[in-house]
Figure 1 (cartoon, one colour):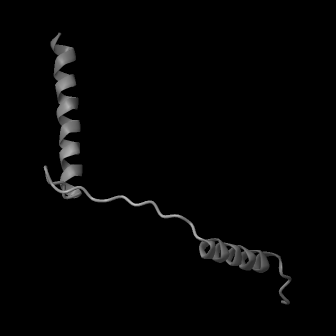
Figure 2 (cartoon, helix red, strand yellow):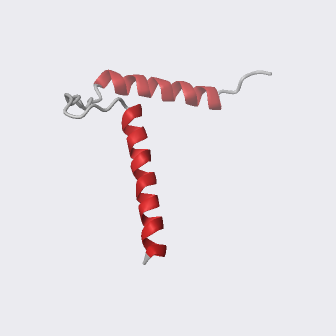
Figure 3 (cartoon, helix red, strand yellow):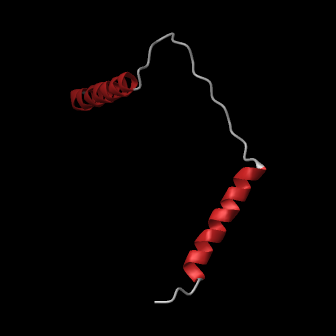
Length: 67
């Protein structure tokens, strides 16, 4: 039974240490205030900028520049 239990505890402690390091690197505070999550919606000007950018990219790719 010990050949199974000892590696199991070793792996569990290693994963717990990784989780602690990840939580500390993200400045986790227990009982702290939660941040807000907001979803942004694409507007007409966003699609316009995307269209102009794609049009510019296609012009650069397919326009025969004189060399």
